[in-house]
Amino acid sequence: MSSEAANKRRKTDGNGDNGRPTAAVVPEQGVGGDVAQNSVMAEMKAMMDQTRLEMSRMKNQMDGMNSRLSRMDELEERCRLQEEKCELLENRCGSLERSVRILAKDCKWEYSAPSEISRSYWTEQGFDEEYTDKVEHFIGRLKNETCWLRDDK
Figure 1 (cartoon, one colour):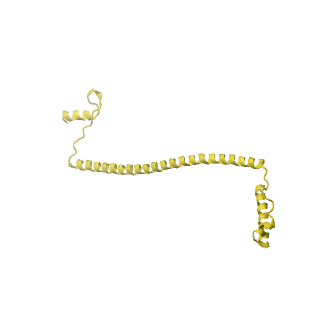
Figure 2: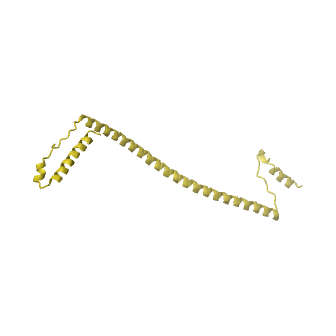
Figure 3: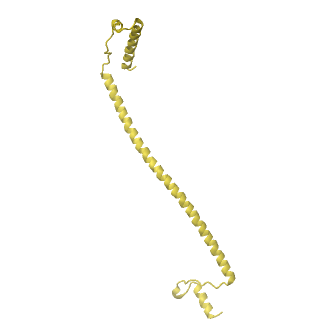
């Protein structure tokens, strides 16, 4: 072996000048080595292309998930606002119910319409006895129903 080859080998051992490692020298391969190197490079390029495709697919999935998450955040905020409005309305409704109970309790509900309309009124208006009977019955029922409603039954 020549001294030049020994120097190259020494440098490839990682113990070059000043004890620092130096770059390895790649021996010349010839025609067969170029084919193997090209094959490895082609495989690496194919793997990188496949990785890029996979990364692109994953990015699209993440963009879709981020979009859905954003929509869900919007819906959650709307739901929270609706819950707040509902709570305010329930409080107001409760307050109004208490007010109505107090007003209804403190008031004296009496039937204040005239007690009877005379039969002569209806006959003077030109109505027959059958109509007059039906009107008196209707007015009596109206009075009863009104009193029933006022008594909160």
